[in-house]
Structures are given as structure tokens and as C-alpha cells.
Length: 485
Image (spheres, rainbow, N blue to C red):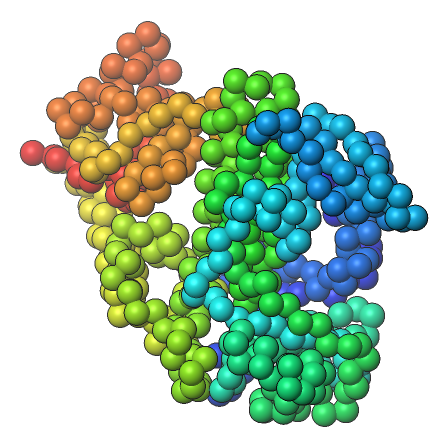
């Protein structure tokens, strides 16, 4: 995007992880990005007004015409196609603008979602947030002083986020109905203070702090739109979906969807015939990322044992049979480092039994397959993998569909499996190998068929590449078996 240098120079605090009071104990514990990502060991605790202005100025520098002080009030349609917008400027004067494409980045205002009646509420997260800014709050002990601090308590959970301007964002997440009743009776400021007073660690951090803003209430909680794109328009960021903020996923999802949406618009304008298929891929990619955060939040809510109350009992996962070993979230979590943040529920709380069993089943199966390959490679009598006959798992297929390229969607190959029905982009080599696997040919036969026009050196390189590809597909279960006799 070109904005990284400006963000780095803005003085935002570096966030290396999160500190939580959550799970089976009341002592704070931390996890760190470096434990799962060596490339990105930190993010930033951004002050949104400044961060958003940086992004706006960056857009200007890239040639975008920016009209500040203008509010879009309606999208203009010609039949089903979006062709422009109605707006009012800073002086309140109304106007219209015609355009080739409308990107709804209206956030939780969900302009198109409301207009087209696309919005679907998530019944699991019927929560409400009330937050304010404080000055004079204490920091967590080193090395966690820049971490977000999350503390569960009887009626919900609290956040405390340090910012580089000396302020701290502090909020409470509670049941929506109970929160609305309390706020109506006592006001938002008093309600927030009452929730904070019920905590131990957060209250201690705020011992000498003062609230220097009015409390803000956010009631429109988790939702998704039925359709994220259509003729001449696309929904991005919170305008498309919003999930409980337990993992501070909003900016991540907004930036990710922004990149994907830009690629989609480029494709739709340059290759109109691909617009429908590319839009489906955009929606699949964005909702897949959204659902990862949603599943993590559901597991964290369900596994918290710190408090027994209506709030926590109402958020237990009751239909945990959905967590089979084939579930895409199980496949994503299995094999992560022990301190990966999706996995802490295994050690810090009481995750649903089916979830734990499925994780272990997938990890044990992968470990067994890895060990079998190692034994195969070390036994000269079994001639390594070349004589093995691979057999695909049920439901595996390769298809051509749009995949994300450099700033646009292009036609490519995707690998569809039971756990990833939306497909995973794959290389032409992987696609060719999958097509050749018929349960009859050995790995050597597959290499010979694919490399019949290669010289000896090329054949040797292909043999190594195909063998390694099949080994990887075997470990992750795409190849169900390798028959050696």
C-alpha cells in the first residue's frame, strides 16, 4: 500500500502480544506474536484518528481524489447495477457523482447492507460494548507494557489498550440486553465504571487514572452480509461483516478486504466476463478469514472458567459435534506451535471435548504419516517413494477459477478438499500431479508420464519435485494413502 514507512514513523506503540486473565485461573498470562511469526513479531497499537489520516494521505499521494467533509447518503442504481452515489458536502449541499464502480467502505453504517437488506446478525455474539479513554493508567509490567490487556469477569470481559498519546482505551463487553438496561438506568459513564469496579487487575491499573472522554456505546455487534458484491459494487471491511473484537481483528480484516476488493474492482473493470467468478472468490476469501476469527472467539468464550454467570453460561458451545477432524478450523489450528493463540484454549480453558479430540486426531495422523515417510526413505529395500501408488482422499479435485494475482484476479488452479471446499490456490505442478493420481499409477509412473519429453537432467528434477509434492499432499491428507505392495 505504500503507507508502512509513515506508520512506522508515527510513534505508535509496538504491540508484541496480548496479556489475558482468561481460562482456568485468575493470574495474568501472555502470548506473543513471535511465537507463531518470526517475520512479524509485533503489530501497532494505533490511535485510529491518526492512523486513518495516514491512510487517507497515502491514498492522495497515490493519485486518489479525496473529498473530505462529504457524506454519501445513498447509492444510485440503474436496475441492479450501482452507477453512482448521492452525497452532502460540508456545507450541507446535496449532490450526485457518477462512477464506474462503488466500493462500500462505510464501516458499521453498512450503507449498502441496509439498502439491499443484506445484513444477517450472528446469534452467538449478542453483546454490547461501552468504552472510554483514560489518562494516568498504569502499564503492565515489562515486557508486556504495550500489550492489550483483556480480563474476564463475572458479567463479561474488559479491555485496556495503551496508546502513544498517553491515553488508554478501556472498555467493557457485556450481554446486550443487560447492558442496554443498565445504561438506560444509570448512563453510559456510570455503567462503565460499575463494570470496571467488579474487576481486580483492570481496576488496579486504573487506580490513579481519570476518564477524559464520554463513554461510547456500540450495540451493532457481529454480522455478515448475505452477498459481498454485485453489478458495479462491492462491500469491504465492516460494511461487509463484523465480528466480536476479542482479537482486535477489525483493522486486519479491513486492510485485507481492501486489498482483495481493489483486485476485484480492477478485474471487474478490465475483464467483465470474469467479474462474477472473481466476486465469488473475493467473498470466499474474506469470509474464510472472518470465520477464523469468529471460531476463535467462540472457543475463547466457551472455554472460560473464571466466572459462572448468565453471560458465560449463555456463551457455551453446545453443538460441539461440528468440530470434526475435517472441519477447516481444526485443520488450521492443528500443527500450530503450542502457544499459537488459537491453541491456548487447550491449555488455559476448557475447550469442547470434540474440539480437543479432533485437534489431537489430526496432529496424531500427521505425525504418523511423517514418521512413515521417514521410514520409507531410510529403507533401501522399499525403494523410497517412487514405487508407491498414491490414492486421493474423498472429494479431492482440481479446478480452474480466479485466484489472487498481482493487484487483480487471474485464472489459476485451486485444490478442493472436504475441509477446504472453497479451494486453495495451487501451482500448475500440484494441479498436474493431482490429475495424474488415479489409484493405479505409481509415483514413478506419474513422473514418466509428465516428463516424457524431458532430458535426463530435467527428468531427475521432475522426479524430485513430484516426489516432494506427493509427500506434502500425503502428510496433509490430500493423498489418503501410499500403497507400497
